[in-house]
Length: 495
Image (cartoon, rainbow, N blue to C red; front, side):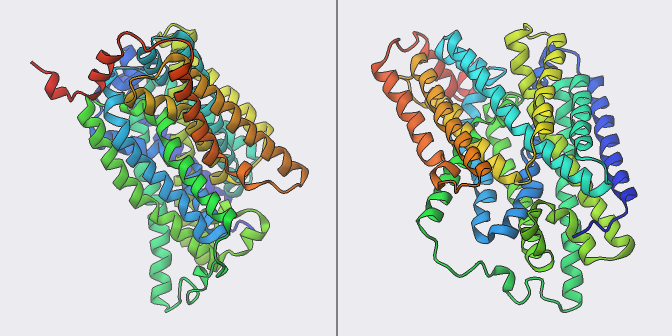
């Protein structure tokens, strides 16, 4: 399969997204003056605006390109990804959003220090947040390399480097307040960029009387009953996506930007709606790809489905324009998610190593971007949704127990939290590394290593609870007051 759109169209789409991102970021610079502006936008972001920004940063390369590719390759089993991505926000709504906002913290490590009154717990949390963020950025840069390579003919490293440079300029200019404006714009750009081409395709096929599912053949996923491995894989993936969403640093930092806990819950509810609408379209691309681009699965290039489909259905100028539209949305996906991750990591790194100043925030931004860029240039993967799924499993095994038990269980101790996070990191990280070694060597990877969350997440929770109950240390003296603050609505606390 060759790319049929003129490279000039790809250049134009990338240039337009870049210009819009920098211009909106410059607007944020005009009103970013204080430390609070840089870290949490002075906690003044309204629910609809914040929900759009969350949608912008959450809908990453895995969502924009990877979901369609998985549907093309795996059929119905791939639908667990959009279901899990969306349902994870329901978990946030029920268990985390409002209490986390009421904690008054700037970052997840701040929450750990306030809840556990422990510097070691804060340091371990900081290291894990940075590790999760770096691991999550790498697939975004791989997606950018794929997109730029297909649309312009430039080497892949140019796409990765371009994303890092543009994101750094946006973050350095205005921090969280600037990025909020950019990400809100990019959510709606991504939605429209997916929706318009696929609606054109469906209208054309309908007008010509052509079945867009090849008479239902696109839904033929083999007709086999799922085996034990498939059931385990789906359960484990669901656990990873549901629990992993609770610990994503770029998602959690968004709740600190809301004015209060009520706004945080309202924001999360709106996000559920925005995600539900968005994921309809990558799924349609995957189904259409099974009809019009089946060769991509055999070539190992399924993640290119969204980029190639419009030019496959339409010839000439219209095909070029629709492909350029999709390209612009894809580039916005990499920019928005990377910017959210880098601004959240910069906050953590700055707090730990640069005393939380604005100049320290800017230095931390460069460090937060440089490491994943190096990792992306040294590695190569096109299984975007699968690689992001492993990051969710790691996050679910480390930060999720800290947050859920820290908010809802009074007897959590610093020793228990640290032990649980380290146990989850060692178990899940070890499984990921072992699975990667087996894959590279050509050996079959056991399903329990391919999807480890089903056993690493319960193990992390069990270690946290057991050490808290039996291990050294005691419950911090101020735990009761802190939990009361987390769970008391703002209106009840006003005189």
